[in-house]
Amino acid sequence: MTFDLEAQSLAARQTWFDAFATSGPYRLLVLSEAEHCLGYASSVRFRPKPAYASTVETSVYLAAEQRGQGLGELLYRRLLDDLLAEPSVHRAIAALAMPNPGSRSLHERLGFREIGTFSESGKKFGRYWDITWMERDLQSGPPA
Image (cartoon, rainbow, N blue to C red; front, side, top):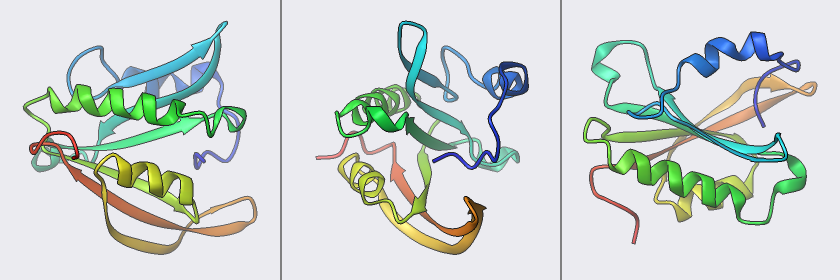
């Protein structure tokens, strides 16, 4: 789930789109069919200060009807492969809204490990959500 509280217009999302490039550590990979977005995987700046430049925050999102077909893993593996080729990127961080056993399992398969959980740190759909943070070392190569 994203933590947008309302649908975003293309114009409103333009700043978000502008943060991505076709090369370098900040990527947006989109899976589409007949001009309909089925899902995406992305990597963005983790924090704005220069000392965090070697860390990216990654995300994967699929439309509800696309889940369970392996598309999220396909997108995320491609993103991580691109990041592994980036010598400037050392660490990938991911934030998971919990409970979310599917996302947790995907991240673990892709070499992420849990760092900790912030309880009730996001509010959507009339309730609070715990956010579990996971990380992956990108200097040691793909997971076994």
